[in-house]
Image 1 (cartoon, rainbow, N blue to C red):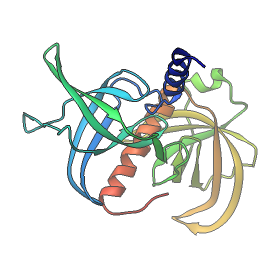
Image 2: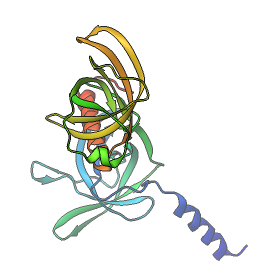
Image 3: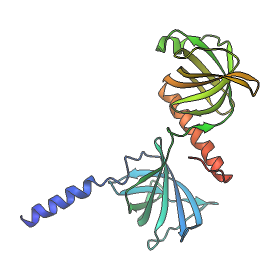
Image 4: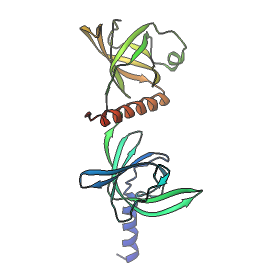
Length: 244
């Protein structure tokens, strides 16, 4: 085999090693300076450009108006907050650049990026009062109708795939319900199917518990719900609470 072919095969193999996992522009980034297992400093920034499968351009982190200088000789832990979850890797600084008056840092990801927390799979335990009503099907026509929802419930937990809630309204299994969540922090309209019904003994003042799966929920509400859950997870983590 010629040297050219050997080099070509090597380059082809390296191109397939995509450590960036198709990160989007403006993906939020947390850079951690480590001392063993201890975090010494934490810096927040965003992705500015995806250069290759291993290289990214990020905005230089700024603290109190000062640009933070990350050393070329250091290895930093880096986390990316994405739609699919929290991704983690290690990075080194390659070079600094100034483009359109923006301080940028070119970084190299050192390992295969790991998903350390999937957003969609996590059910957030939280109480949110909402309105709902039984509907005929899960069509877009019903989803978009501006109707009054007569029943009320309170969530036990919620994820981007569905929710568990309590209510005094009796709803049969396999029924479609239209849901309106309109709280201070989140607004969602969706149609879900009841996959589990249970009569309970006055939990929070309610007589029934339901588990539902979202059957028709617009992408914008999935994204809003995903963002809401992720932010709540971070709040729990800061308080020292462990979640799966």
